[in-house]
Length: 165
Image (cartoon, rainbow, N blue to C red; front, side, top):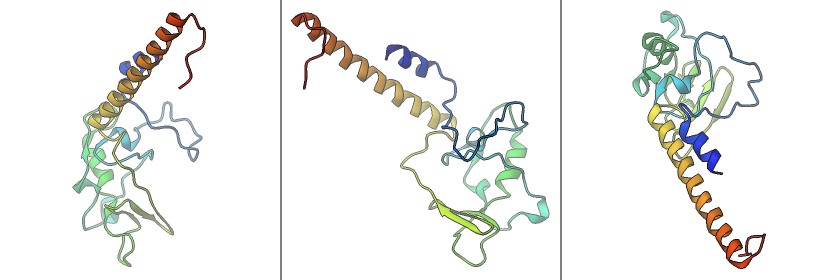
């Protein structure tokens, strides 16, 4: 557990688990996943390309609520182009753009629509990743303390198994 705690504490960026819908490797591919490129938001694993300017939505877009993250993979201007390619609106309205994300977690792309929401951000934004890492380190510290207490009880009783609760 102590080694796991040290591994977590040494992490630079904590990546979301690879979804089963993405079996292809991304090594050597230009760009980066959206969760590494924007501040705020939620788990977004997609690799996105911006729409040509004439096909972008005219109303609110993700660029109104997400800010490009400082990093070396993709220029901030390119990230902004991607963010302005996705409408931010109520996906249930007939006037929704072909690719729309709602502030309530709903999304629509072509004929598919759905909703996803989380209690808090974990991966988008360096601050969210650092907070998640700190919480994981804290949990490891708690478990190490429990193990140490149980180990001490075993030594004091001469037992080789921890006491039952």
